Length: 411
Image 1 (tube, rainbow, N blue to C red):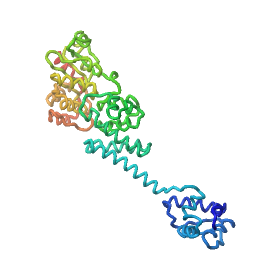
Image 2: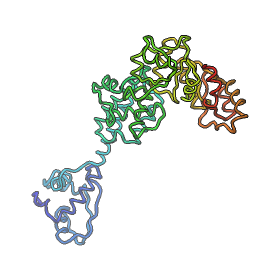
Image 3: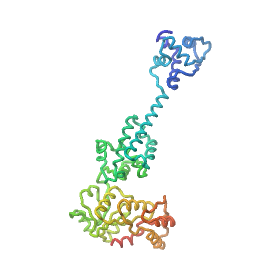
Image 4: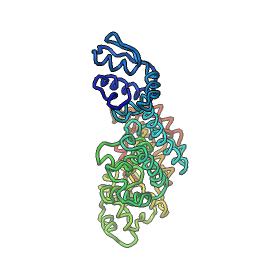
């Protein structure tokens, strides 16, 4: 056999198909043997010419290393791989390709880890949960490894700059994107970078990754990043400004007010004359206080404080206001109080162990059964005895049940 035409003989087509598959599985190494069955007369003669021995039956065993050597010695091809590629086109080293892909993926995760280390976040408790979530979601597996590595690196730089970690005031998502990438839309919904950063945000605040636009906006806000400055507000009453703005008019009228981040930027907000501002968790407390004619400064967190709530409390604390907080006597309520006491110098307001025990005693004759205290125990940072008493009693006391005392204090 001395020509390409001989390799192209139709009688050898089945051989080349089988050999091509075996070589690609073997990493393009001509090793091992293969068996062919059901050979017709033409196939037996053509195969015999290749392997150098007669084939009397309809089956034959082919030693790939021997066939490779014969092809090289004959000068027909540079070896078995060359011969098959001549008649079947380029072959793929499948094990090598898998190794290359695995190496590329490993390089992506290594780039992420290096990036976290470079910005001092390598030991962050949310880092591994973030990586695990990205693996499960396949977020980085949908793009080439080189791009994934670049996006991962930029995502880490974005994380370093978000207010939740930097301690800076809330920022607009477009401003954050511009600061880090130069592109105001780099963190928009639908972008790979936005998904990477938002999944990290979910890991930071232990929230599930949202499927809808409203949930994504809420998650951005939870880490101090605003997708807009007007849709989220903080509910207030009794606050004033330095220049007699519309907020003062509402306060004079005894009305509540909803303030946006833009309002906080426009207005020089301050407490009432005594400098004291009360902070509650439930809107019913503020509503009842307004209805009762209270003129005290009052801010409602409406559960876990949003970015705009934190921004207002920071403004008030830095302006010298004395903040006092009351919330639900349950584990989420203690979590919120810990945040406000530690981060905004809030003092507890009717929110200690003695207050809890007094509430249980006063409510016992009038409330059939208080809610069971569910969830993981949370230690109170300002009164360790409070946590002990709550765990012992096993009952939650919500603010709405304590309105009479709270409103009397506010009035």
